[in-house]
Amino acid sequence: MNLSRRALLGAGAGLVLVGCAKGQEAASPAASPSPDPHAALLAGLIGGKEKLVALYQQAALSDAKLAPVLQPFQQRHLAHLAALRRHLTEPGSPAATPTPVVNPEVTVEALKEAERAAAAARPEQAAAAKPVVAQLVASMGACEAVHAQALGRLK
Image (tube, rainbow, N blue to C red; front, top):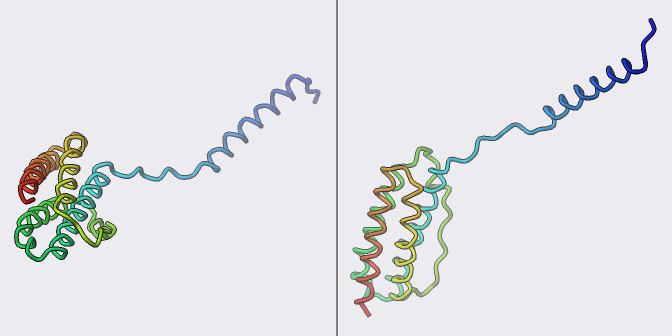
């Protein structure tokens, strides 16, 4: 059998291409499922609410006279936290949230600023959320804005 040089080079190039394509399939890692953006949003919201609750707890410990005044604020945040957790689909997600670290002494001014910051973040978070969660996020933002106003009167 007499093969031309052109036929031999063409067959060799074809084998190289097939070998490269098969090598890429084997070398590429299996595509892992991308994280659910809704679950990530919920985890962030829950973490933020846990931080606010911890701030209120620390503020109450810092000033015993202020503790009964701050309790209703904290209770509303706990209610928001419970509502957010009901929207999680993975049962282990709340436990995965790290424990928030707070300052040893929290002032009313610090609480007010935390409430303002949380309220300011809510429109963007609501826009990224599913409709039922967006309603909750909007309600949380309104509550936090009112908290900031009310805390301003405690000075």
